[in-house]
Picture 1 (cartoon, rainbow, N blue to C red):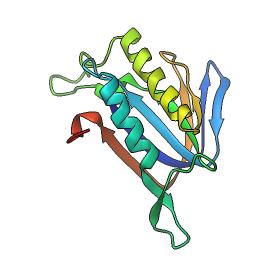
Picture 2: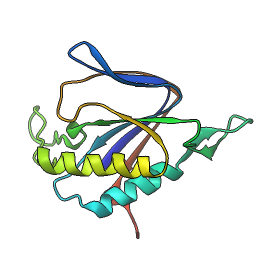
Picture 3: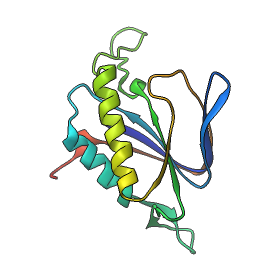
Length: 151
């Protein structure tokens, strides 16, 4: 499971010109699911996301974890995070999960974050979406469950 996490002052998702979800201060999480991912990958990503210390303290240092009482999360599915451009010029997405498997694990990430009392909003799985954001910092982090050492 691979994520691109951006600290934002706002973010929103539209489908067919209609606003689907929007957040204020928090994280935009682009989430890609690999064809070999399991619930163990979901647990790793959720644990990392929920404890990630990327919010600024009063001294401007990134010392504070995401706060479920203050920060919002916008989770957007993005299978293209597994695009492979090693051969030719057209990306291959053969390592991305199937739509049904990807959706199941994506929904598990959302559910587990909500179970931790995060305010979670989402895009529309599998839809052609337009994402708008204001990245603060800018601050962008990559997480990949294949990097887990032990869990």
